[in-house]
Length: 356
Image (cartoon, rainbow, N blue to C red; front, side, top):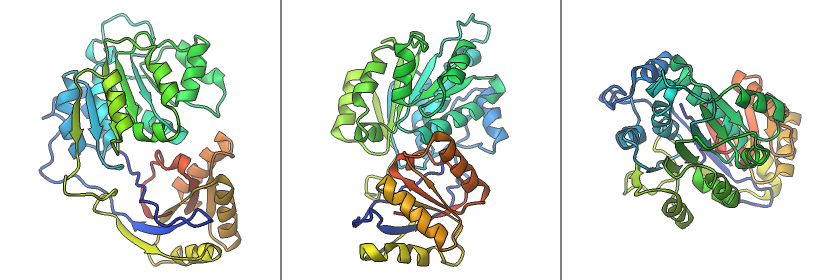
């Protein structure tokens, strides 16, 4: 369900735009892939996944599900775009009372928490979990900044099974005693390396302190810096490190991505970008930019040159960011210029080029 890819930045110039175009093909399950039934996934989740065309497990799911479904703490490491969301999402859902013990009396407090670094990733993960739990009626709530508190508070009052949230808004609601994490039995830190890079570690520690110690903890990350190992030691109990990566493969991207690099003076980068965007067969294209100001400038210059471009960056309100993403998904806009804040969490099909 994930279709995200972030090619490595090479030779950033003053514009913050290095041009590495990646032509991507979709990841398909091989014919001999393991089915979710073989891995012990409950029928309601399998049926929900089948409804959206997912019938077999990716490598990271095949490796993590047997461990996680048994309640073990797991550190999952795999390249972005290889199915990590269901790797933790299926075990998380299967432990909920609404699925595991539907006759049990429930208080409406969340039983699972997923902490993510960005708003876009929050929406994407919450959407994936809601789809996987649809047949069982699982209630999933995305909590993130840039939106009014009231709808999120009302949803919490009505009872929620799973909360997916960014650290800042989670802390805001918990400090106001509007979010009670005392019944969380599964904690997931998704894209933990990104949260560390964005300085969220103190907030994450404050959130984890509010969750019962007798829980299952899963930590998923594309890379495994020493700080991640430190997190694991503090918050996990004898975790199993699952690495769904070929040890001989040092590439940061999956093999189906073709990469090209061009050197250009800062003043020529937009012109070169415009040339790349005229490539035969180009479909939806994402351009990642380092700074918010340059992001808007590049989007405006592409629009002036006749391209259907839109910008997504932190200076835009959440409504404007979502409007740009909707236009991109629908094809009204075929060039999305975004800062790194959206690098993990853009879940859009049929993207043929990524340029950074």
